[in-house]
Image (cartoon, rainbow, N blue to C red):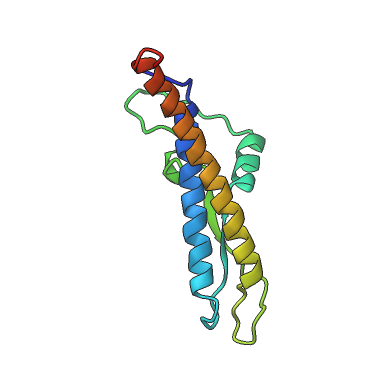
Length: 132
């Protein structure tokens, strides 16, 4: 049963992305002074672009075959490491100002998602109570 035309599922996936991004940013901040640590980022736009530009067509020839596209654990994002820059003398490339800015933006995004889910569930609760 799909109560909100996939909206809750989309919001859930968005929360997964925001949570992964928060963990990655927090890990970068925690390793700001670790020698040779390379910053990581959660990438969604490139994964989407690659999927949209893909011309490879797949077809399951038998219902018991494994579905295509399951090798990525069905996550629409990936975590990448930036090995091309060095900001500190110890080989570390974490820019604390950038990370703190990204953390603040991600927290606002996450809170917006939570508010939207609460609104959807509040609407469902109102319907269940009969409009009261």
